[in-house]
Length: 597
Image (cartoon, rainbow, N blue to C red; front, top):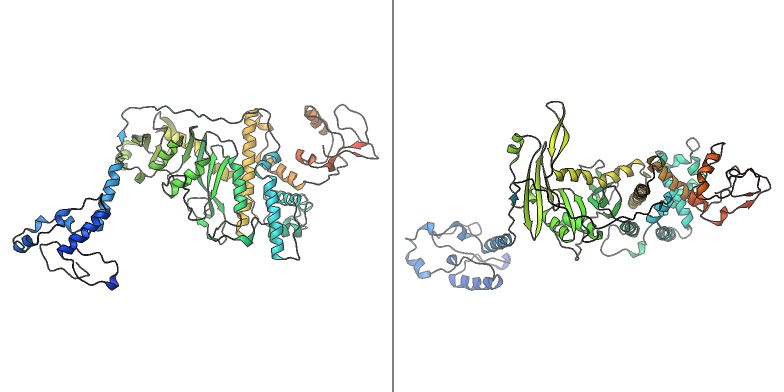
């Protein structure tokens, strides 16, 4: 067919010229001499492509004399393919020949050795800081000072006659109030100052109008320098970069995982996503690298198309996410990283292994090139717990693929663990209405044990999430990162408690930990005058006796440790009235008081 018109020739194959501009072309055919000239030009452009010349070198005399006698079967169907299709097909065949993947089925229950982790975590007994001390490692003074400067600048840009005059101390009070609001959980912020529902712990720190003014003017970047590249995260990018930089300084554990995180948000913004598999389906999507215990080490917000990092190999959109997050992992320390089937692929496992990182994750069956497992029907007939293991060596890297049939087939791909040794797991059987023992491969057990770090962080953040409403889209990200820093601080505190041997009953819960941070922030720079609180400072050795003595009578609430030592306003003062000494076994009645012990 040529432009919808059937050609009149029956035996001689005719090739048509590729028309680059249809407006300036004519519906004419190439002669054999013109065709040969064009093929010489094409062959010079594709020297490594073999062009089937028997279809192109046409003998005119033979064609004219034997056109009625030649058999039509001498010309194959592929002889009529356009030259571009022939070139593309041979290029693909050449690529496939370069990478020959031959999977081998495991005949024996071979247990492959795993290289030990070369890194270590800081184990300093007794190095447990205060809750505010852990929080200050992630939200330090530089971050707060940057927010203060940008907020004051933004207020002047809005209205020159109404400056904000925000200070670091007042910003800390604002953050402390937001934490208290997430703990109390009233549906509207105005209720904390309302007469019927007033919460003195919040209302006594700051007036409602001042708190609303700070919330409306809080800012993170200068609007006068908007970039030309249309950066969607320009307004909050400095805050994100500073917080994530502090995440990266946390000592990393051996086992880490990568997964998606949803930040609930139903407002209008172009980077808002919808993930039907998540509990919170609408919101901002982030990619998180965290440990199996939930400690976040790296965090990346998805904002659409991301330019590829030239320092890393390009293995596709999903694989590039893992490589960017894993860039901070120390090389050749044999860390173990886990991810799900959206990220996993053969090329990702190969690149991670070259970086000295072992990988394990579920994988989609169409990403296992050339791997022929038994079909699902046959495995289902054999019963639940049926498994197969295949191995392959690609670019000197041995990879193990496992197919396990439970209720549905599950595929896993790893560079360090396979199906053996197996174990028995309890699974519900709908036929017998009871739990039965099912044989489970080793890779599935390890994956289930260390893959849930991001889900753990999400559940902890959801306990006391800051749900303050705002018309500015980036406020949601700011509040989420603040909550994430609190959870990360608490997880670091728990890790230090494990190293120091602190009993579980003496550890602070997440609620107590966040409350202590909020109290410290709200009391920053204040001079407390608790007249009922008498005594003098004591060493840590008598702290237990002080606590025992305090139980004997009614006493006022004691400020946190960081608040008592934040300024000179807490120095001892001389009072006219005498009082009972706080020091154990002391019956004196001094006149010098230290209220904030």
